[in-house]
Length: 533
Image (cartoon, rainbow, N blue to C red; front, side, top):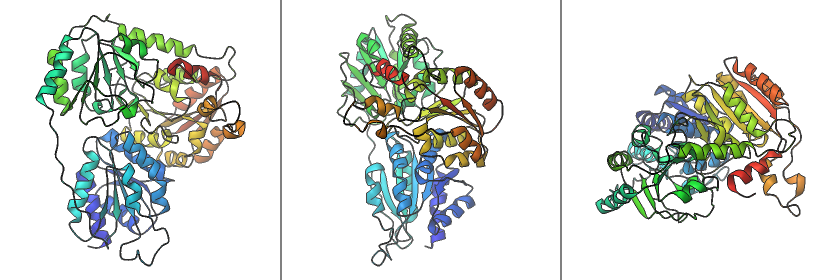
């Protein structure tokens, strides 16, 4: 099988699984064969500036389109550079197929240049790392590997593209069915509960219909992880806000007599202790593997079927009808009040609230890791799933901009707002050109304080490097954005922010709003959400 034939085999397999786009940063050779084969199979190619953002674009795009995201990078440095994006897909349960060329098996003994054991490199951060070669049945290997990306829990897979090698064999897998006794135990506990509290997680993302049928008429407060935000609309009276493992949700968890987790994966929680006494019943499509939280009853199986069964026995509760909203609104008020006495510049809370007020319902927000994520995730209201996109399990900086590219391509009729800090934006500045070249309807809002604010909060007064460890020089991101072809605006006050947003959002196409934020608020915000600094 030639390189072109093998490339066509891979391209046809991902297309058959629903993929319509390939992202990447090619290095020549087999990479270009694969891009050509993908285009011949009807897939478009999106050129990125670096491998990590390309992998993030692909995984978020796959997540939003319910298909395998596809990314192609070169051997050696390209493969090594993509690891962070692949790891993010692994911990956020996103489907990704990464295709790398490699030093061929035929040449491995004589070539050391750029030679890495790429399958070993990717084994810890993928569901499967395999070789697609001309020997053996490449079609079976590729289809099986792509299928692994889409099987639950979804995640990344890796294919080394090597026409001189033999394709990897395919392991057999057996799907587990839930024990009837376990299901009965869970349903009995739920039917007897008076104050059940619902937690929704990443595994429930595709079940908005059944979940809303279950909870539409219930007063049971419902908390959602970042990845599940929007499953229950914020306009519903039982919408209680976020659950992250922080202290902000503690009052509801302490008040519950049963905690019902639907699709929750503890990779979504920060590593605080779990001090709650109510028994926990978990329904999921895959088993929990972490010792962080052991449910009293864990039911693993067809989650849609299980949620439908819950609807038939879901109890009336003694919660007040608006218990969820009251808890959420109290916590949001506390969050908004967590500001310095005399702000200098714009508070991070104002940035989120004023942006939310300026954009239409249905706008999608991508959020980077960093101190600004704390107000952004809580204050960004959603009416549907996928209206807030964030790196949850890995919580990596440099995520929001490539995620915005993916969201704009997957949801071309939507306005996309990208919330990023100056540190995270600095990691992927080149992708501003990608946004400009593609003419995407993205507005980037930069929380610019010239520092790593979350790290600054965690730093000790002495012995942690001081300002050298957390401070940057001042950067004019509006000017940089204009250099890449975006409309660029700056804001040093709340009024200037309103004006900048109106101008940025009043046009179709990409824009950037550089906001000078008061970083002193972040310490108070962190204390309000997590109970400590």
